Image 1 (spheres, rainbow, N blue to C red):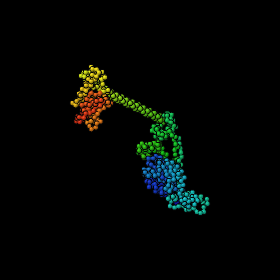
Image 2: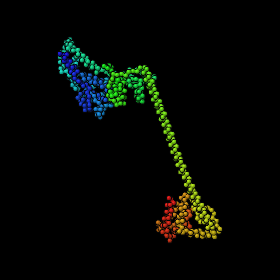
Image 3: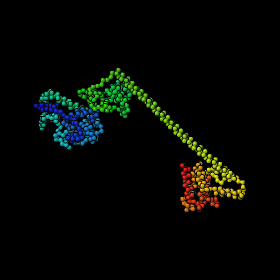
Image 4: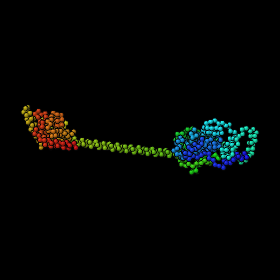
Length: 569
């Protein structure tokens, strides 16, 4: 009868489906789960994370172990990052997988990475014990430690038994009576029940399996490492990493992986120890299989690489192993890889030569374009210089013709005035220094010269004002004519605009401006005489006559203004 009562929980367990690793689908579910359970371990995972998938079976075993443990009280839950969304930042998850232990809804510790041994240590060190009889929160235990029979009875009761073992009597039975009761219980248990109990014990033992650190390079083929290091020139660390992470642990897979990761910053870092179970039951997974395309992947690194390249996410463990190559196949594969590497080097060198040719062509093209541009600039500069020389020659020619005309006019004037010249150009223009020959001498000569000069002065007339302006405008060298017109315009304009002011009615002939910009030019002084100015007795100033016509002054001013504008245009 006692045996039947003890077998009832086991039968109930086999017929009912238990959930040891609870699937949480939202942030609210995570909060409710931690609130419901005094001690809860939340597994933050991702569907694309290879280590998460690899460590999930071990976590399920651990959850099953603690589910039947009467001493430790820990509830296990799993939540995926795509279900949490932005709420995942509230839990400060920085890597996958991450395991967080909550006690009374407060975080007491976490483990990052697939470290099942670390999870065990975290649970054991966080006092996640269940409350037993006589024990209160914050108080000390008032009951004696449970015996083996009591612990087993409570374990069966937790699994769902409808009846419980009777409490121990106050008086302990003798050792002999206990042995007798154990014998009766063993006889009551059927072989099938014994087999089920043994299976349960094996499962509990397997769930408590510890993880140990092992060197992953110990299982590598020494011949393959020798080929990669001696025949192909790779370093020992790179050869080991290529075999560990390459497809199928072959030379070809190692070379392909090294070609893809040769520029990684940690390519030459030491290989860390890896966690591996000390023992395993059943079939051993030799590789991974992609259910989307059916490709067999030798290790987790190749699985993650395949997932990143193709976007596939449906993988499973496979007992299929990649058959190692024979020595002949290895030699042929090495030769093929050497040819492939040589072809890639040749292709890269050919590409570099083509790029060098293109750069040289570009350099020559740029050089030719720069030479053309420089020649064009020099040609334009020569044209400008030639045009400038041409203009200078034309101006010099016009100036020579003007001087010849002046000389002819001076000769005619000398001839008409018995060899005397009463007017000449200023110091900035033509100013003949020839000796003025005279037939007379002494006072008689001076009187005649003064009379002739006075006669010459009287030749200025209003009718010749346009001729006087035209003569002054003909002086183009150095802009002398324009300067003279400007001074004449100032003299005549001031008198025409302000006839009441006496200071404008007198022109100082000793003034530098008059001597250099008016007196030297033929027609300038005659214009002033024609509009009403006359020399005083001292011959050092020109004074405007009282009966000068204001209309004449205004008309002359307008003519001078027009001539000055035309000169500068």
